[in-house]
Length: 170
Image (cartoon, rainbow, N blue to C red; front, side, top):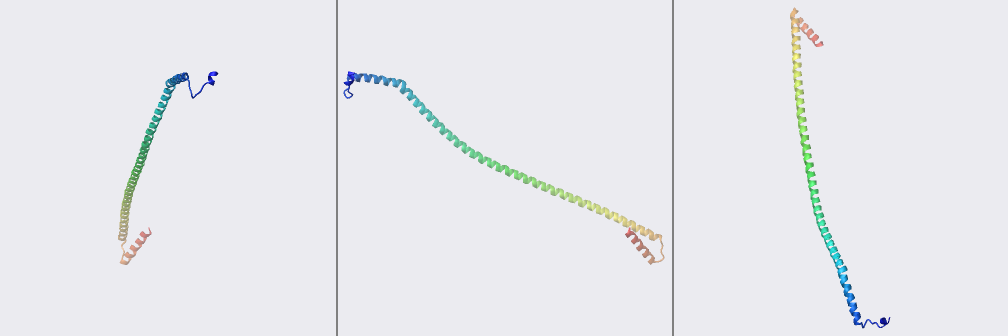
């Protein structure tokens, strides 16, 4: 204990300086070998990992920007294609409607023409039948007039009027 009372930090003993230096150097070497190198390697690895992560983030950000630009382009193309498809569909619809109207008009004109032809043929048949009947009536009248010989012209006229009245009543 006597040594501690005589100890002074201001006046160190040369033996103390020697052993302090030896212990400090040994400690420093051990720390350099077992602590500083692994700590330095860990810090370098961490720095490398952080830098790699930052680089990957930059690449990802760039890719996201590219994808965003591509998405905008794809969206614009999709809108343009949709517009084109709608335009083509409208043109096809208009074409089909016009074709249907054209066919309907042609068919209606054909039906009207057929109806007119039927009407004319029926009219001609009716006129022909009427003419035949009128002719038959005239022959009947003439035959009856010829059978009956009348003495006077007045009797002829009266008889013809009577026959016409009979025919009209029938």
